[in-house]
Length: 239
Ligand SMILES: NC(=O)c1ccc[n+]([C@@H]2O[C@H](COP(=O)([O-])OP(=O)(O)OC[C@H]3O[C@@H](n4cnc5c(N)ncnc54)[C@H](O)[C@@H]3O)[C@@H](O)[C@H]2O)c1
Image 1 (cartoon, rainbow, N blue to C red):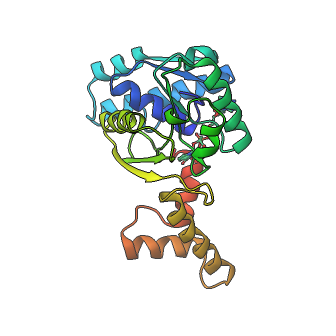
Image 2: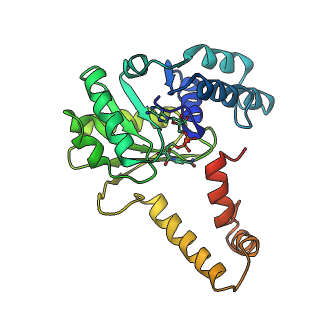
């Protein structure tokens, strides 16, 4: 797991609960301390899952025992499936994929949790484009079912099958979609941000406040949160 922020810590928690050994990497020890707190005592962490009866104490303890938090990139790369969740900056992610390609074993699959950057750009940064794929999660990762699996024309069938299987074992509902480098956002975020843009237009036209737009959308469509609430929640991890 590369990047132990809002998404990376939650993804690491889910994968460890599913039975995988996970090395969770971040650039600073402070980020890893925060990640460990998220995973244990955070709102969607393991202690809460035990308290709510979602998992047993033993399952939670076993998951924690499978999780290591590390500032060693090499350690995180030494696995059969790496999930990248560093900040949403194209040049940073391309650099990370280049480094991963150099250090990870040849068979290792490199997956990105990008919200919508082109998977083809990451594949092109490697000598293993058949083993590069998008695996887009939603926040909070321990709760949301989303597994938007994004494939390029070069992603191999065996890579797709391996990641679909991993997502299923994590309790998610994988849906395979095509990468489109000309459009940010794959499917979920293209449709979602079209709605957010229209919500902002309504506010700019002074037709309604942000709070009123949120409430109307919740009342009309039974959404758990309105568009502006969703943007805020995604940034904070719904803490
Ligand atoms: N927040 C959401 O709701 C959400 C949902 C789906 C996908 N995403 C995507 O997930 C990715 C991460 O988002 P986030 O919300 O977890 O961000 P975040 O800022 O909470 O976490 C990013 C982490 O990456 C670390 N980092 C920075 N440079 C790094 C490097 N070179 N190597 C390793 N770690 C590094 C940071 O220290 C930080 O802990 C982004 O691509 C984002 O678009 C976010």
